[in-house]
Length: 125
Image (cartoon, rainbow, N blue to C red; front, top):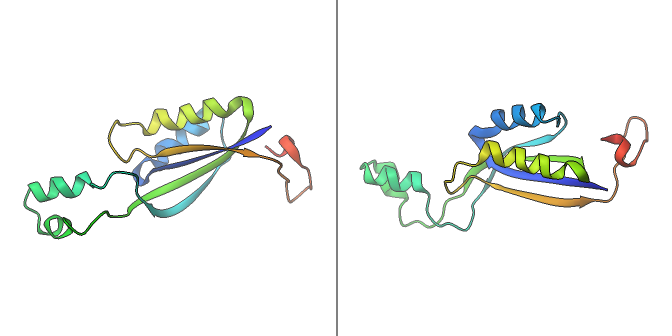
């Protein structure tokens, strides 16, 4: 069985995450460019800090509702027995304890096929 590990992370954590995954043995993954999203929280703490410092651009944003934040998405398909290592690696690099660290989702993968050779199943990993 295979699993897809999908992680939504901060933009500035991409290079560290890429290196950590490679060092953990996950050399193949896909990353999307800039995506926008937000979690449950309704506060962007950078805006609050900017407002406290009296920055006009931050003050203008207060009261307009929740803002979308730029993130990156990484996906990798791994054998089921390596799922925990992949998740732990991503968390280990991205966990700061602050809101906005991201999320990791694990999904089942029913099959896979290498386009070049037609091979299918776990062999393509």
